[in-house]
Image: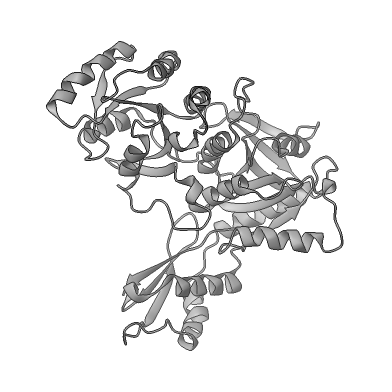
Length: 433
């Protein structure tokens, strides 16, 4: 569970360049998976061994100048709500603008650490010019240059110093997060599960500020329910939906084992729901897709099949995900959703013995070996599951660099076929033997 750091500021101060510089410290970030492109404003970075999640609020601002200001204020408010620390970026070339002052007014009221980052400081004259930013009333500033990276080390040293230590889950109970865009029925789903009888052992304010973990114990299931629906639904945040949901979901997804991705079936599995799906996938969480309000969809006999097909096309190549058609208002299949989440949780923590893996997969690999590359043949000798919290497998071979993604997908499909990892991303590594 990493801390969340948001980069805020008006357009064109260099937030995205700075963001890209920080996340490239870790090559492991953005996969070239279809559907992840819109998540380019979310990444992981680390410094001095401390990992944190970085959010660039820049790419979400649309429209003309007058809309800009409203949008930026909204985003800054959201970032303030959700982040553990805030990097407020300004541009030394233009000096202080009205918009910078507006953002500063919001940030001066904040109880969280705010770092004033003066960008584009790449020569001595600009270092002198940066002094004017003291006038924003936010104390010391950090002069940096996003383009060449100067000054970022000092800023990151100071940043990781104040970030909270990563908390391991203290509870052994599985954590299920209900995520999705606003108004899909998340609150009603959670209320329906908990019911008037409230089978609750405890309400613990979770590791996230006032995201309440409800311990749920019913029908032989016990788990922590992480509610993203009711957290500070501010009336003044007229939801910039894309930004709002992604920001809220990041927090919940990072803190859970299984994501129950709930969407409104009458509105469809749209780009924003996909966004949250890939977010969960990239964090290697178990996923169950819940198509809510199924009672409102005009259906014929093939409706479920056709709809399932449509969702699977949207989430290719990771299609081994349970999809449940339910209606919270009619209490239809809501417990099936929980049963399925429990199964996915078990799949995510499943361990396959090395012997079983090799006995099952080596004969298949022998029959269908990796294609030769420039006359060189890849020989896979040995397979083992890595000791991590989610399924990762190492295949030891003589020429790992020649094994292409298509063959890795073939191996993943074989693993799924024989060992049931439904609902869980599986990672495959090729290692030199």
